[in-house]
Image (cartoon, rainbow, N blue to C red; front, side):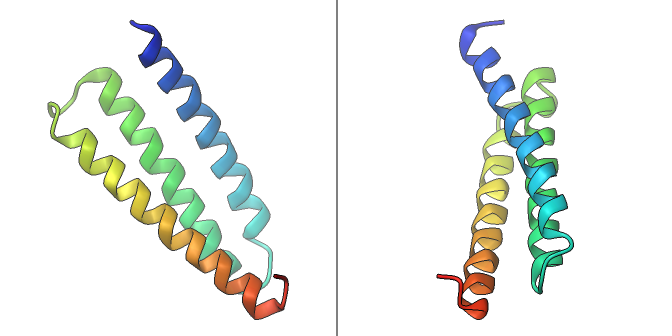
Length: 92
């Protein structure tokens, strides 16, 4: 195992824990809080799948880049929902 893979695993674990915490914080907030929480939960699961597949080399190389694209798409949607909620509540 090289240092890049170790750094990737540690940073993925931090992202997964942060997504778990943010999902719990946003799950009980004003609408669209549950959609934002679901977005963070899906991001955490996507990062977890990417971590496992990259470490176990399941499915070969073409799978990991697509998982990264899915994660970035989920992140964009979650950020847009957060921006919408903050603009709707007047919290700019």
